[in-house]
Length: 313
Image (cartoon, rainbow, N blue to C red; front, side, top):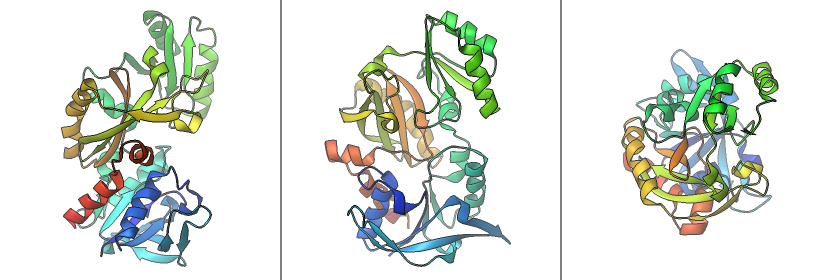
């Protein structure tokens, strides 16, 4: 029996039919492993030891309204567990980054999935820029002038989004006119000092934004997220609908480009977003979509991940 801790958002509030972390924890629990859960804010560090105010999972089941029961919170020495799953949702902010620094103290004695050092070094919208020939035309800048010039050079049809956004939040399409660009840049700058990302609009998004799941650098399956009527965002958080999808030759080519590097960095559970024949993000913080993938294709990513952990521990 292994002792596995999940650093995650509150397990009591998850959607049991869609949440990937719940699914992974349920697979581990069903095999008889000892499961602990805690939130990022419950981490602490002293004298080289990382602790968490954590709760042991007493029951875990796919029953709405009664999916989990937890023991009373105790101080858990994370150096005494076999594995930690780093699974809280973004935003990828200084709080998130701090947890990666703390979890790094556990390695190599404790297996941390994904490797916190490389989660820290691989922000979704920036990591992808290190691979040539896979992205749509892209600009990262804080300059309104540069975005306006980019807009003119790319058929006056672009998407502007926060560099560290998630779930489709803050994504704007600018088409034909840039008259609201100044206001848009001002609004983002009031929220954050981070640059913005602008990308040429990819019309294929109307056919869906494909999420491809990789385990230890290898593609295992895909779902397609189709935008709701009148939307350019396909994220399921904003009404996108998941449908069955196959891996194309181009999908496999893209995975072959990035897969070895993901494996080398210990980014074991990742999801990439593909629109048409280009990749828009490499998700390493808290990839989703594994329950939908199993429903459509029978591919069980949770089983693969726990198999992987068991093989190493």
